[in-house]
Image (cartoon, rainbow, N blue to C red; front, side, top):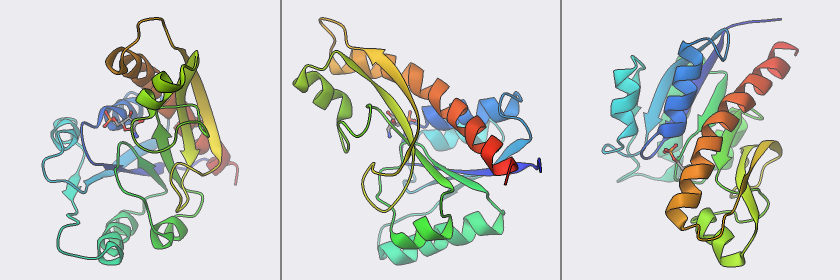
Length: 195
Ligand code: GRF
C-alpha cells in the first residue's frame, strides 16, 4: 500500500546529503514523503541553518553531559513523536547503539564515501588514495551497531584520477553521494510500500 513516508535525518555537520534529500522530497523526486525532522548532535552544525532555510523542523540533541543511552533515548522519543518511518544518517558522526538500531530495525540508512566494505570509518577518501585504488565511490547501507557494516542498498562508482587529492576526490564522490542517497531512499520507499 502506498503511504506518505516520514523521514528523520540525523546530522553532525555540513548537511549537504541532508539538503539533497530535503530537496528531492520537496520537488517530488522522492514521492509521497516528507522530512519530519532534522536532528543534530552539535549545536554549531551548519546543516541546521540549511534545513531551517528549507522550512524543515530542526532540533539539537546534545550529547554533552550525559550517557549514550540517555542521548539516544531522547532521539528515539523525538523520532517516534513525529511517527518517523525512515531514519537517514547524513554525516552523523556517532556509532548507534543497539537501542536505536532496534527501535528502527531495518529502517535506518547511512551514506559512506567509499565502496564498502573497503575503507570503513574516518577519512575514507584518504584511505582510497593511500591504497592506490583506481575506482572508489559511495555506498548507502542499512545501519547496525557496527561501523559502516550493515547490508548494502546501493553504490555508485567514481574513478580515481592521476593527481587526485583528498579534496578533488571527495568533491567528485560527494556529487555521486547526493544522487545515490536520493535513489536509495526511493528504492527503500518502493519496498516499504510493498510490505
Ligand atoms: C559525507 O561524505 C558522508 O558520506 C559522510 O560524511 C560526509 C557528510 O557530508 N558520512 P554532508 O554533511 O552530508 O555534507
